[in-house]
Length: 313
Image (tube, rainbow, N blue to C red; front, side, top):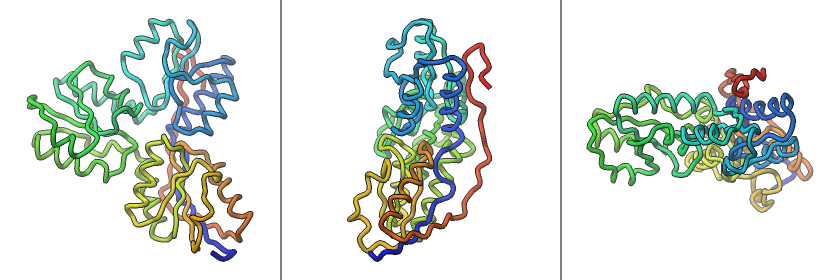
């Protein structure tokens, strides 16, 4: 590799509206009510964001019973089950629901199907907080399917079947599964449009465009971020050699041997300063020309969540 490289930046990339809302909810709650506050699970899946919020006074917990009585508990952007909401009330916690509004819309969809006596299939990853929370919106007749093989093995006797999908998947993740479900259950109901959120889809479309130009693609995002992992997979499927990195320190310089064009994107929970950090790291060694690619303009925003009974914003 010579001393010049071209860098294309995906557009859009980084924070989506739901993540911005979740982070601002934590910061506003701290400003309004002081420290400490407690957050059930990671507010979003990014270790840098978590560290920043911890420094401000947020405590992240795995179980609700770790939180003292009468303290504030924020539910993460991924959403929670009805059982956890009930447990929080029993523990006399003051709650703030930072669930992404797009995830909440899927909760309402599942609840309606359940009221109408449907078996509901959730296409998503077992154990992912969003899937666990969505499945927990109803008491029974809900089934999580993660692979085409699981869809093929599914055996439902109810004639009324419906499906929803995890918001952070890719179209390639769900296409075969939906095809199998429609073959097995011809009357199955599903969303008029994909449940994959607009921000996830926009970032996947952008990384496909990167793959057409770049020799290598860096996807900035934490290893436990579903949407970031999907971005790396989409890049690979589009023919681009790609790596998921938390920040510049994850880069192996050997990856850049014979590389002339680099593409950079960031998952929906990765702050832009991490992309800037990668650029700064590159500029130490190479003469870097940076170009931002054209992409879908995102104008959606969500108001931060409030403590029950209060108005934060």
